[in-house]
Length: 280
Image (tube, rainbow, N blue to C red):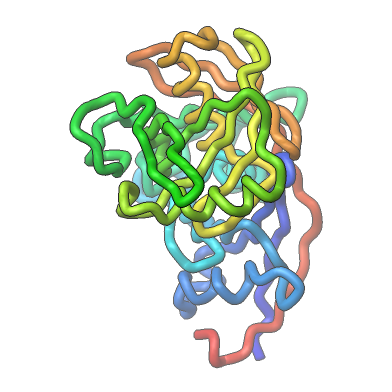
């Protein structure tokens, strides 16, 4: 048996197991994510964050969904930023983290929140990816057994489909339609599904179905996608509060500029998980 040190962190209830890259170098990372993220059978989390030294910058982040697929994650990025500062991996509170979606500038603010630049959103269908003819992909009809929904599709480092609705769906509709949209043939790599209510020109409210996860309390790249999509439709301005079940994220975006995401990231506890040799 191997004792694997880990940290449990969350960004607005979107929770992660955080491990050092060096400590898991002998493991298959997709398999490790499938093992550690199982709720009730292991630590349980929405994703696994593997943190190590970057090639060009002090910190590199890799994020794996509970099904072992590698992805980008805004809440995870903020958790890694705070973890790196607390562990002394960086000097100062502003630095760059290498990710699967490129280099990201992060800053630990004086109030303990973390601000991250996620880069510019991607609208070209091949970059999302989504089966569509032109960009931006707005009001794309997605046929479902109970009717057609219309989705604005974009990538903010991860694929997102935004549905603007008058009120958030009840459990029956949410649990019935969200997985159908996630796995629809129009989305060759699946998509997260953001049910979005525009409450004012500066405020959105979401219910989130995250690809490879299911319902989650918050999603950083998803909050960014909803804010960008709402701005494309003319519903909101450049600065938006995005409310979800886990709390509030602040998103700022101007076309031609990187998206700036600000919100909390918290260490919950640290521990040691005993890994069986079979998981190597």
